[in-house]
Image 1 (cartoon, rainbow, N blue to C red):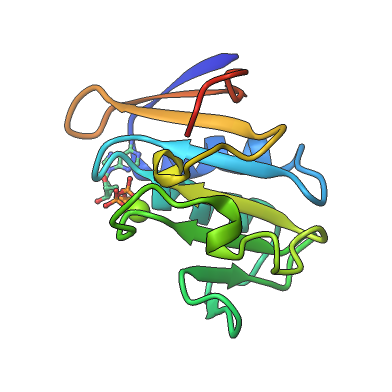
Image 2 (cartoon, helix red, strand yellow):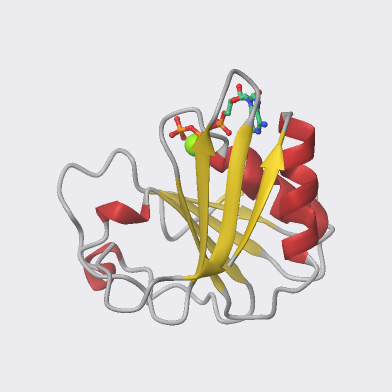
Length: 145
Ligand SMILES: Nc1ncnc2c1ncn2[C@@H]1O[C@H](COP(=O)(O)OP(=O)(O)OP(=O)(O)O)[C@@H](O)[C@H]1O
Ligand SMILES: [Mg+2]
């Protein structure tokens, strides 16, 4: 588990870019944090770090998902905020989409009824107007969502 302080959206993106350099096909990144913490900013940093185009395209098969392509690995970005109830991973069809070739990044993973195995946890805490603490580590074993 590492903890880093960010003082700007650009710095958050750089922290994400550093993580992106270590990602492998099939990796899952679960990003937690309050509204406006910078979860989407972090995902954009992942995509930039992987060299993906900054214009994203919607997935034809999964409407909650945005795909960022053209880089070292594709990024599959899912934002579960609008889900009304805790959803099972299989209900969402996440496993139906061919994602093993890329990186799955999930905002609001608390909405999942159960977590995805072997995920990397990113927790963004709002410290001040433009200050964030970003913790990156293994998803806590045995913890739901
Ligand atoms: N250090 C920082 N890191 C990231 N974003 C920051 C930082 N400081 C200020 N911000 C601002 O906070 C906002 C973060 O927005 P973003 O959409 O990334 O949050 P989010 O966590 O995805 O929110 P939501 O839960 O609504 O999806 C942006 O307006 C950004 O400019
Ligand atoms: Mg967001």
